Image 1 (cartoon, rainbow, N blue to C red):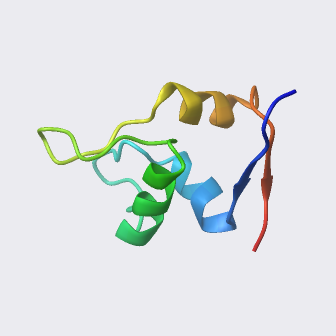
Image 2 (cartoon, helix red, strand yellow):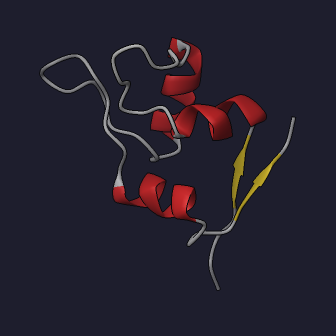
Length: 70
């Protein structure tokens, strides 16, 4: 049985913009911290950007059950 990950709309949208690209959408720090707490993105790397974890990548691909609330 797999666990379902609950995301807000802002978290779901923001997950697709990590790591940030030049000229891309900037994800608010509060959303980044929430995604980090859920294990979907990393803490800031040496260059200050965050990366997507394997779990976060699987959520983006739809391979892990997730739903949006709020």
